[in-house]
Image (cartoon, rainbow, N blue to C red; front, top):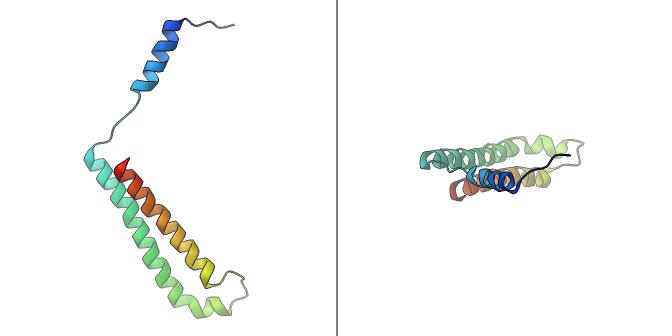
Length: 90
């Protein structure tokens, strides 16, 4: 059976509290710009590719037509942009 004194518990709690870190401003700007840029790029290229392949997609046997594909691209793009905004402000 291991026993610990109250001073060890307090110092462990203090160590966890002190483990908080803070980013520099340039790290936040770079990280958030990367996520936002990737979100915008994925939306633009994804929708552009869907427009180019619309005829082939509609004639194909798959049940996933244009609506679900647009939703997927928009969801991924919105998630990446949301991560960029979260990174900028948190």
